[in-house]
Length: 467
Image (cartoon, rainbow, N blue to C red):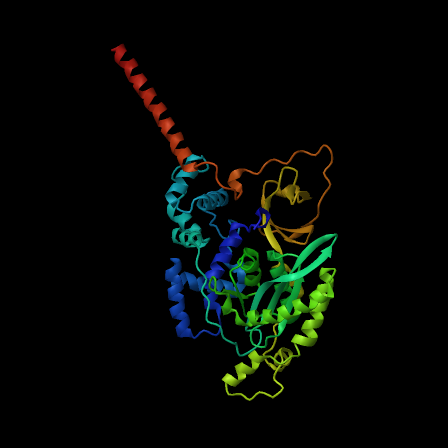
């Protein structure tokens, strides 16, 4: 992800907690099995089962928002130092710079940098809040190591929207001319595992993360929420943006094992049909992406959806259920399934797929985003605000700050004599540290101690001469 797409640490912590509890949220799991699974997950992540249960309860009550660490205004005790929120943010930054740093070392640095008096910040307090935010020692170790995704063997769910599969296919041979340039098309699709009905499928000019997020959004808007999505480990499917969007809508992402794309049998079989389309559309010599998608819509709606599917027939025969001689098409199977669809408000879906990032409001009450200046508010000068935006349209951003009501901002034109925006302090950004703050503090204290020792020796010699 680009720098302007990096989530705030609070959102990252909430997302990590969600990924930990996601396997337990499945309503189909037997209670006894869930208890066993909870114990394994707790041990694997270095946390207690009680902590897992708190995460579950918070998520079921308030969704992803319930997993976000509380700010001072929302959750820190009033008995803590007045600048504790700043101290905590600095502690998080220090932990992210070097995950192996202990709480004692972090306190040592903060005291050495004169951010807090010696002995005021208690180890147990900071350790507790770092752990709750997902930055405990064992949690950070697991996070930095990376956990290999685990997927289950391929099977067919008994009802629609219980599981979907998604993938991107490279349109070999589909070349079209746009603005005088030759381009290749890429197909992003999402298909229902049970019925083989295509929820959304479209050709794009690239295979960036946005084409996956866009196809997910279109599928959910048209057919509602599905329970799980089975995908591979391509960068488009492991992006924080996709994980957060699905988590906000209570959709679980399952990843196939690395180099085992064959496990996504439904979508892989569908891609064989896509090859037939590619061979045919090349004969039409398409001149634009719009033209390719028009032919693709005809192909899907008229041919694929209404053609008997061997996979559906195989599924029912394995359960000793008779199948008509004419077979069952994806559209027929989708329509005959009685499982109700769960539709979500379009505004909620739109919000879930917005991109998130943070910015510091400068002395002019503005923030800079994608090379443009946006006016926020003079009341928020120096504050770190969270913004959401549509990756395809940055003409308007939404600003969030603590308990304030979210508000919209638009780009402003900076005059000839506008003051230059000051640089954001390095400690407040996510860039790699340029120095070891721990060693800086140790060096500083060492020199101070040497100066005191020199003064003491000098004074002692002066006193002995008087005698």
